Amino acid sequence: MGRQPFITADLRPDMTVESEPGQASPAGSATTAQLAEAARAVLSEGEQQQIERGRQDTREDLLSAVPRPNQDVQGTTLDGETVLLHLGTGRYYTLNRVGSAIWDSCNGSLSLQAIHVAMCGRFDAPPERIADDLFALVTHLSHEGLLTLERG
Image 1 (cartoon, rainbow, N blue to C red):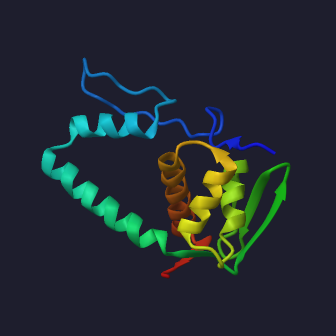
Image 2 (image 1 turned 180 degrees about the horizontal axis):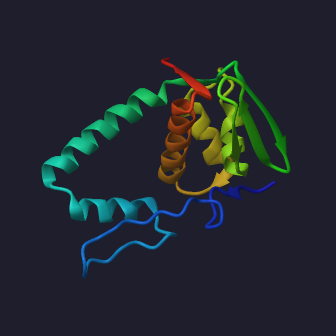
């Protein structure tokens, strides 16, 4: 079984950046690097340095974190998509096949670094892109109360 594409155009969320008139704006299929370049064009040098320092600190802290599902979350997977129900809030969440693969790995026994390595072996995408999307999803799931991150 070969490696699968990590996030194809139909699965990756559309992202747009508003820019000043005459300044090029990345399309909905823009890569992370293109979006970062567009952001750099509108941020001051000090703002850029502050973001980069925070990004590195956050990533280093996150790599050793071990994600564990909240006990109040029930989920089921059908046709590669996972539906999660947070029993405490009554909210439903749907994860595509990439999100489902990440969710399945967030079982409390693997660090985010180990999950990243597993996703790199499973999906055909640059490691930086997989890391960006992994961190974004885990952060979002954590903010929604679906996952807890235990510091390793």
